[in-house]
Amino acid sequence: MVGPVDMGLDFYRQVLNLRAYRQQILAADIANASTPGFKAVDLDFKSALAAAVAAPSGGATPPPGPLWLVDSAAHMTPASASSAPASAAAWVKYQAGTEVTLDGNSVDLNQEKVKAAENAVDYEAAATFATQTLKLLTTAVNGSQSSSSSGG
Amino acid sequence: MSLFTVFAISGSGMAAESERLSAVASNLANANSATSSAGQPYRAREVVFRAVSAGDGADPSSVGMAGVEVAGVVESNESLHSVYDPSNPLAGEDGYIQMPNVNPVDEMVNMISAQQDYEANLEAFNVAKTLAARTLQI
Image 1 (spheres, rainbow over the protein chains, first blue to last red):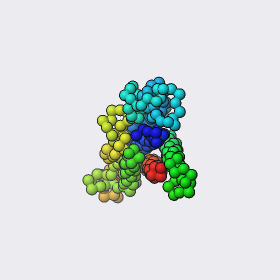
Image 2 (image 1 turned 45 degrees about the vertical axis):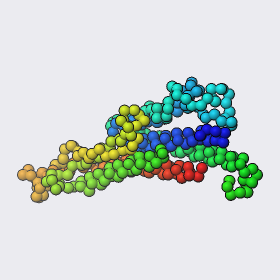
Image 3 (image 1 turned 135 degrees about the horizontal axis):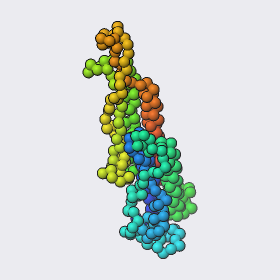
């Protein structure tokens, strides 16, 4: 999967997967906005980022590639088994600070809507970047012909 | 793929909210039903939701990740209203008749809440649809 041609594409694959997963979490929160005893959950990005920085050789590091700007040799090592979580599911945490109703539900519908909208924009951004990366590759393959050809 | 799971989750949410709305409609329609097929005055009904977990439901990442379902319909145990109406054939010897315990204010609030939740589910569904369509354009 990771090769010189892929450039940063594998990174965008991970971003899109993660954003789709978070959309699923937020949809589950919204669907359970009236379920007694349901506690709202979300991805804990802050802790995940801190863990990824603390363990640069873990699975959460970006894939090595010619275009990847690295300032540490550790960034170039491929994903390996370490203390970093294997999947994003390990970073799903209960939300804190939201109001808990009498029936034990902690979903704040407005907050969830805002988060879902934000997450959708992030997803679209990653998709746009992936499209542009592919266009870049096409340009590199076709040279100056790409702008006039229909393949662009 | 996660986005298609969103369709299932939001769909279950919309189905559950519809059922809640049905209960509200039933309660309001029967607010004056002094008797029913069971022979007793109508009692207000309320649906109870339950989160459907994708896994065993032990960790936060699986609770509710398969949506929501209606666990059951419970009847309100609030006391029935006694209305003095001696001309009614259902009235007791003292002239009082037992009327349903439907509270119209409760029902209206429940209705607005169900509507808002339904719309939120619909919004989440539409966002997932947009994202899935956008993915096809990469």
